[in-house]
Length: 178
Figure 1: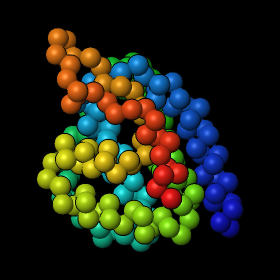
Figure 2: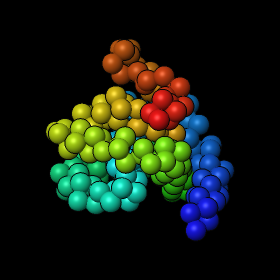
Figure 3: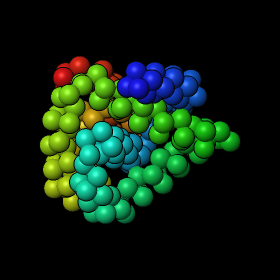
Figure 4: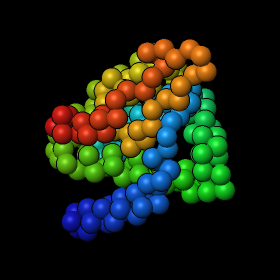
């Protein structure tokens, strides 16, 4: 049964990448939207952890505490895909969310029995935050897997180091968490 679930997840991941590949490869993202993508990645990671590790109460506490921030992040991501994918924005959005969850689930499978132990402290770190920006910071600091690797678009005349995206190599850090 476990092999069937794994095979099914691999098929879903492959289909999602085929659908979302072009959307994930956008040339740049607005700096405010980068925060939204990080918050969504953190939420997705905690959702995978809740389902895998029976941490429903922790996940529900996270969602209740950050309901407004999570809704705002989702709206920002929707606007991003409307700007970048035009008429295919809903498909691109759905593809991104599916790819995100599948890649995080696959990372959990690769970690095996260590996954729940590794992801447990993420709940406490997330719940101790106070806003979307600090949630995004936790996502980046903890290397939460995020397939959306577009750099932050250059600001008109003032791009600072604090508004640049982190290096694109982060998605490959799953092995470092094992």
